[in-house]
Length: 123
Image (tube, rainbow, N blue to C red; front, top):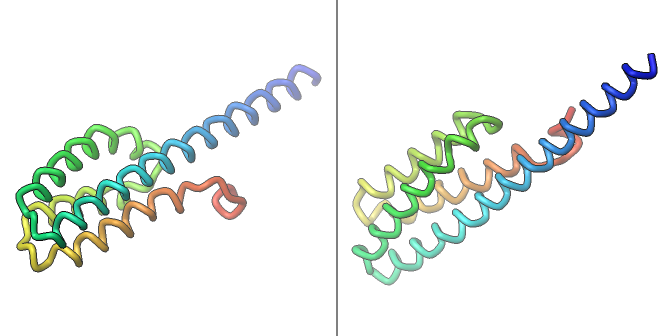
């Protein structure tokens, strides 16, 4: 009986540590990517479309590298929404850039909020 209690406590501690790590990682990625999207937005407003497009492509490459790990614990629809937002931003005319930048910011913030270490997300 005592051994079972220790196993349960160890499993609980492991699950708690994994949850904290996942939340911290998704928060860091979300904040970093949002800052980079803000940079793209400011470049787009300054009408520096070549630089904005180059930054968008860099952002897409980094997202593709990181999205596989994030997709292990975050809803795939949320990850796909960010990927789709980046693709739209690259493909569309500058006229639609503000709309897609706003949608991309929202999708990136949603990744962390759904994964945040809160009681409602645990239950």
